[in-house]
Length: 204
Length: 204
Image 1 (tube, chains in turn yellow, green):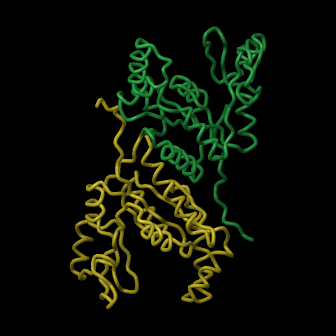
Image 2: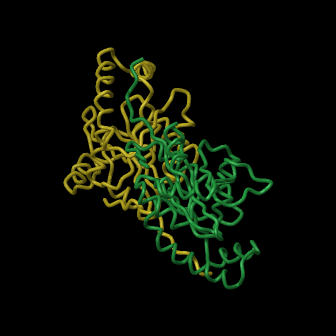
Image 3: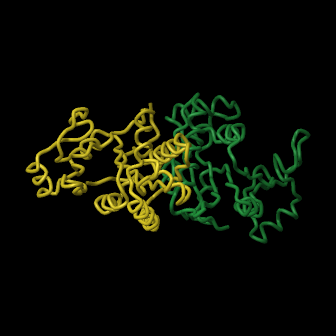
């Protein structure tokens, strides 16, 4: 059959980002439950594996030497020290998934998303926010892990992060109790990106 | 409530285009049936109103003088002469819909879409195609209004038009018997465009 030639689609590097407390984790979790076709990146960490955790699923558990080696070789998309433990995303994993034709999804804070943008200007950056400061405050309180101090710090941080929205491609307001709407918006964005005539060409 | 300020969305000027026979009419018809929230533009024509037609719904029926006046005043997005009758899209109608905050959808041939691109670089251009030349030929034959000559001409034209896809934003392959899939793709594109951080600003 003489096929009409149209541009072939490329796999996407998708970053779900936004201030702490807007619901990034729940969104990615729901995307997995809904069987969105993507590879979710697993973070490498130097901390001890807990009994209920699975290597390669929850985290890649690596030694401090192995982690240091990845830093030296520039093999991490980004990394951070959290309470003395190192956490970071290995580039190899993202490269492999993209090479196999899969979309890759990463959940990152706003600074992490900006790092990805610099590394790979063609990455697809989605900013998640919520409707108001009050709602964010409410959500952070619900977690019950925040002291009053850290709460006001997080709100102030969220306010600052919102000013960096210009570096993102899309913004979704994750309304309370409307997680499925948010996830459908993410789906629409991914679908539309795959229908573009001019595709993003991700390089890492 | 202290709202987080995010960029306000603009109405879109959406053009559904593609070669003759790929199913543009059915797609727009289905979008209307599915109650997509948009203003569908009505073409102005100088031909006689038929008994079953409604002025302002099927067409705007105008005199040749009125049409000439719109040409003079540069008040048409594009126009063409079809069997001695003039057909064209009044800019006023599109402007009014956009001003009221509605997305506007137009169904145009590839040349018409290119004209819109020149007039309004921020218009959203969707190219509809089908899987193969054989499928297009089959569809054109089904219409039974084509002579053998005009069929080969239309296929050749489609082949040429496909080379102009670079001027478009999105491309959808309208698979036979999968009209609903196609319409959902259009829906995803429109939804995603409304979630962009940097909006299209349509000027006419």
